[in-house]
Image (tube, rainbow, N blue to C red; front, top):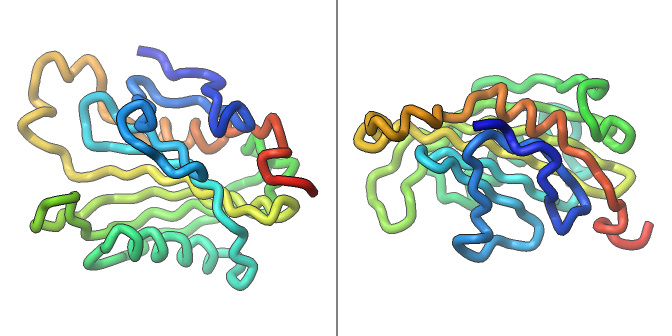
Amino acid sequence: MEPTQDYPLFGGAFSATLPPGAIDVSDLRPVPDNQEVFCHRVTDQSLIVELLELQAHVRGEEAARYHFEDVGGVQGARTVQVEAVQPLLLENLALRGCCEEAWVLSGKQQVAKENQQVAKDVTLHQALLRLTPYQTDLLLTFNQPPPDNRSSLDPENLSLPPWSLGDFEQLVTSLTLHDPNIFGPQ
């Protein structure tokens, strides 16, 4: 299965390359207007693209940490642990023309799924693209829960491997802005 090239996001205002087997969650349930959410066809992995208000009070690496901790708070994480934060090279991004700084963060959050008591360690990879001209923080999140041994060993599931960090990197670097009017009048 091949990645989906130039998949339209936010009504076509953006596009990106999605990994193989990505399902648009908005076809299954309501998703907030500022988010695009995709889930893996077999695993519990997910990808989220969010348009957020620029958090001008935090800069650099601290901005990446701020958003990671904010996501943990929204998800009711019992623990939040940052493992690494690194700058992203702007020249590798399709959004380099309007992105003034970019960061990638890896960490773990201990969260329980809806209607479950047991919390699991979920690995999160986030890319923060700061679109300062548009007063927007663009946050991309790759959720990697621990594998569910029951489903992952099914023979029909072996044809669609779990997503990798390379798949996430392709999403981040391919993200392209087509219509700046999504940000309102400038």
